[in-house]
Image (cartoon, rainbow, N blue to C red; front, top):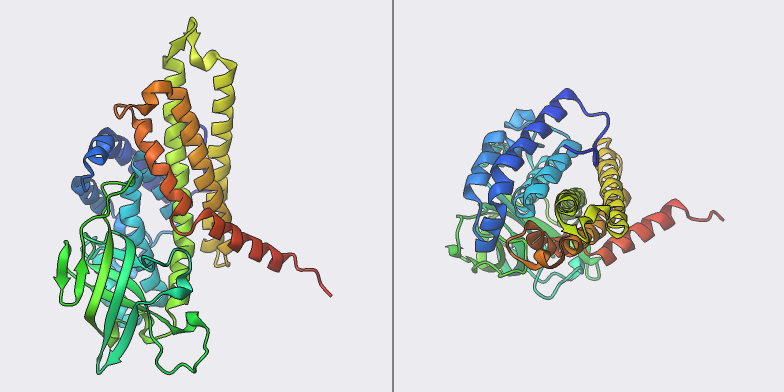
Length: 401
């Protein structure tokens, strides 16, 4: 373990968890990640190993069978897992967001019904907010939920579901207009529905279809899908929190912690890219010496190491701010923005250090080069982060009078 990206003030339990996860990553993920990624194969054995480690219940309270750990512990574990293979961190992240939303906003019945099985990894979560023509404009969603007796009938098309095929529980954001006066703000008409389904593709239950996996440039192995609802009936008891019209706030709370997670992923991928770059620079020789001895390469390594350290520090601060009970949208936005941008830059520098070999699928950096761009758009684009950061800074530094 190198000097970079160390975290001060961890408990003995946190250090033990992280050491266990790092050992698992080094032994069970890194040796097989590139081969599985090239085949776009779901990492079944890795996921079973994560279940045994208890990572699916890391932040779920102990009363529901989880480990009851902090967001910081979770983020540091995600950093380690993304260092091995970013797709694996994606498999647990959407599950984590749904579990977090249930813990924070669910009814007592909903928490008791889902959280123990989520902690064990028996119920696997997915998170569905985006739509094909939506982009970052969440307020423009068109999927609808209409009350019909004791049920709601859901209709619409969702996009970019991580774990769309493998999940058995999907938190779906839809529009419900019941009881709202005309002209109400769009976000007040949104409701989160807890949709239970069978894993797989095609029609997984009446009114619900999960088409096949979306073919992507990177972020392979994990299944990313659409979700099509056509008369899908959901019991009224599966409205998250039991009350309609709260979906936007619930989803934004989930996204806020999700942004800390994406920052952690960026940190992990950047760390791995630095490790590959600094190792290759000492092994590859040109003009009679290792390329690490050339000043041009040393400058790259210096910049890469500094970016790895800075991104990690911001990610840790964002997690600790949330854990302290404070609002952290500013810190989470900054951490996500910086870590994803620095990740892209560190990966590209490692790619350049590899020269022509970086373009070969035989070398791990080729995979990282295709994975890094997803972080620029996941959980809100860089532009969205800058909007959030700018608005919050203006709130904090508003001129009085």
